[in-house]
Image 1 (cartoon, helix red, strand yellow):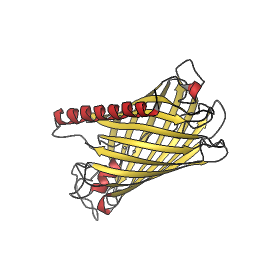
Image 2 (cartoon, rainbow, N blue to C red):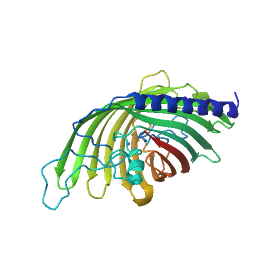
Image 3 (cartoon, rainbow, N blue to C red):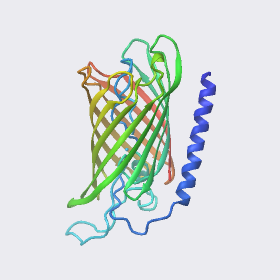
Length: 323
């Protein structure tokens, strides 16, 4: 099947997923009172271990914005009332907060991103094009489902190859939300990621094995500035018959909404590959603009760090649809 046919399938998949989630959102009943809706997400991916020493661990998955507390006793010098986090909670016209919320893996936002990324690999002349759909939906007030589908076009084998890479399914449970005093609040979340590989390792595509990856994360949100800081820890282990995978990754995300619908995200991934005793460190900067509370565009710049970096540099562009 040629690239055009694959692309048509990917577009068809994206449109189908969009219609399904729009239907689920419109039919889902609204919970009158939630315990503490601390909305903090997209991307998610900490680091996926190497396959052909080309990339994996880079094309990780992406995050959101500030949390919200239920009304409490006023504090001296601190404004009371809810802290906007998602597009539904943000003040009218605060589309930037809605955009940042779509980039936070620990927020309560439901969204779909359509992303294209180009990565220049560390080997001479090798490149990777990653076409992905990354979505999130709230199944329950404290249960979020993250999911991804990846299609790769690469020349790491010496020939141009293209095929499906993986499907990622990540349920996330919000354990608790609490105030830390002053203007800061914190959400604690745990989850389990299941990565299904399409077994195209002979083409230099995918990790070559299925993986399971438990994680824990914390979202610290500032009521006044709407800044969100998110440290996450995730461990990847292979559960298939392919290459051995054992990687522990620390990920740190910083999110900041701005006026006029803009937002920015810094995303640092610090994985340690126990099998190869390497640190394939990489990072990402994202700048986006929401045209309203639902639709926005964003640009990404990526870079590898150190001698074990999974790629040299990369760029990306994405379309975001919040629900």
